Length: 311
Image 1 (cartoon, rainbow, N blue to C red):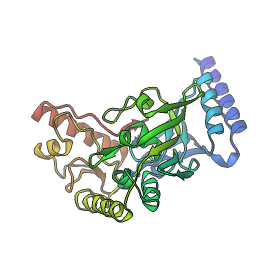
Image 2 (cartoon, rainbow, N blue to C red):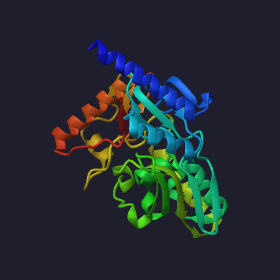
Image 3 (cartoon, rainbow, N blue to C red):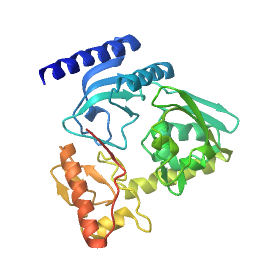
Image 4 (spheres, helix red, strand yellow):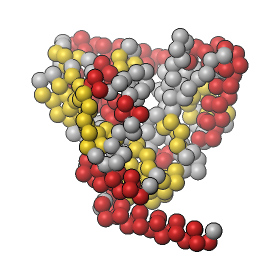
């Protein structure tokens, strides 16, 4: 056992040395609190937190991680993520610091993976392009949204994505056309193959700026009225079960306002678990488990989390 521990420490040192060779010192953080990088505003420290600012850096790191077996996770805006209170004992690759370029040509918008979906929708509005209005209030980044086929108000990424560029877990560049993405409800080939998205081309349509703006304003008002935007959350906590709505099942199970510590089933929209103040990741996870158990017992429906749990 003693020899094994020594070997692990030496390997860890080699991994750190290689990361320091690839990235400037200012892009490497140690024991970075993940509560600063998730919309739940909870989560312990990441052992290493790397600010990735180019596809070249990302490709080198992924190639090395594949060869060395290093544990890592890619984070954009942290809008669909719950990190344990103990933190993450691997490497976080944070792409939101870089990958912020947007290019517009004719009816196409090309956005890098770290750009927020809301900013992309605003760029479409500025150029009188329609199709991305539904994404204007989604808090995630382009990369994460395209991987999970994010959607709202009868719109989703599969309807507007033209092409996607990314990097495989082995560090190879790859490109997909829309028809190759195998999109479904909150899933894609990108998610299945663990592709790290670097750039997305959106194919939109020319429209009337006034009408696009009105549609975005309508969606924003509906969100404001129906969703608990005043509290930290990860948006919809559970996926929509086939034939049901998660929020209604939770409400009908009598769980509106149910709390564990600082975590609460929103009284405004039961599909949201919110951090009402001082919640821990353990509070949120325990409440999620209780909701799943109650809905299963009451209706025989299995609620699948939309939120990713990282430990």
